[in-house]
Length: 246
Image 1 (cartoon, one colour):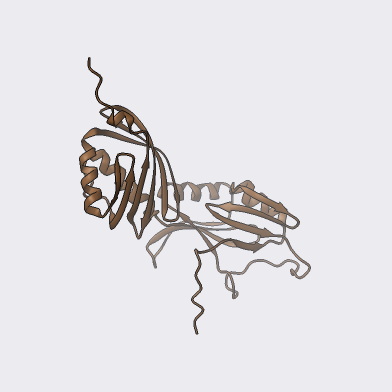
Image 2: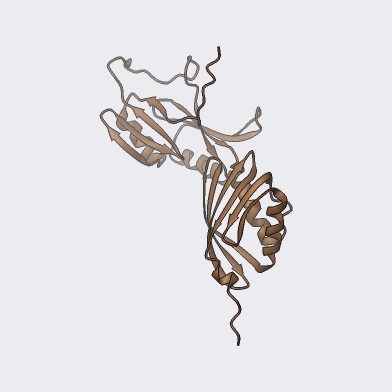
């Protein structure tokens, strides 16, 4: 009988170093990852949202042992990169810091670019292009608002929408219809900050409207590259208040 394990994915990764202080200097000092915990013979840094634990040598650790990607076990660890410019920057920075690396290369299997590098113990890492499809869907949403045309926004058929200006809406037709009604009042959108966590995206934005600037916070849930839920939070009073007689 299959176990059919249910999991949200990798919780953390743990690696073994022959020299803990040297490893800390590399990951925190050279690469600049934030160290969030230090304990006896252990430190933990965070790469994106993944904790990486680095343990020092134990009595069973062979003297002079080094990582070998051809042995059974770990081959390498790949970190996701969503921006080609960042990949190029890191590739150049690794070379400048004299970290052993391949330079930016193309993985012909997946047709994705990456740079591979090694830590002082020879443990193999990659920074690998993996576009953030959730963020791309949300970018398309705000770009549609700027253009005044939401027809190309990737909504799910059963998308839901809740806002201070309407009762909860469900279905792509209802959501597109509501947005088409409010777009004439919007002349511009500025995304000030954006965060992505798996399928969820949050953004702080400012809408330029007929009533002046309206700040807002928006929350999205994206499934398989399509927006499944939208919840904007803002003060609707400037938009619904009756005009003041001159």
